[in-house]
Image (cartoon, rainbow, N blue to C red; front, side, top):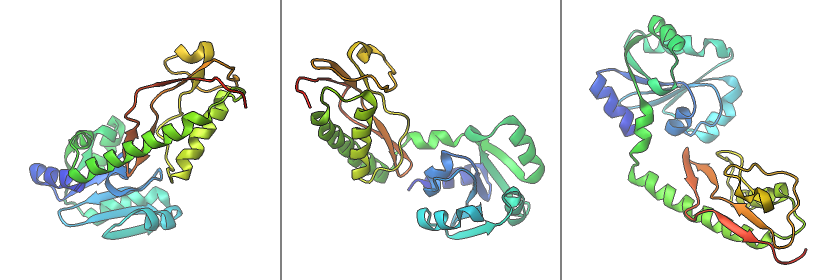
Length: 233
């Protein structure tokens, strides 16, 4: 599925491994939601290299064909180099800085830097299915939250209602802070929620919100909502 893009790159670049070592691509290829680690993609295997902080997390979130854990996190990359043992590799250009590429070139037999962010633009059928289900869920959560917005609640409390509904539906990862603005602030394009209290007949700006599911960003299909508060608590 998702890994197929990387396997095609292996053939095109004539290398044995595609190395991923930064977010968000780590989550995209393996479901790992932590911050540090290395994933190797070969023609037949998905191989993980992490430090022992992530022992339980990797076993819970990921399905590696091989998993290697090291106590010293500073040695993970060097252990990957030992494992690869001079075979040709490529790295993700979208998450690699110039300084990092200079380091990689001394440690590995790097044949290419491939922009793997392009792989995320073309969705596989299974990804499209997840996105459709996620959008439907987001619409449902927004519909469940609207009736709860009443005069006397602060914008932050409205965000809390929305987050509680998301948590009730087992959503754990938010893409960014949800935008909620009311009254004279409802015209703000990126109005971060505040302690401002919603008054009767105020309009509350509740734009489409985003969350992440299986490494994919999902948003509501409905446009921004302007909800008029007309009843007291």
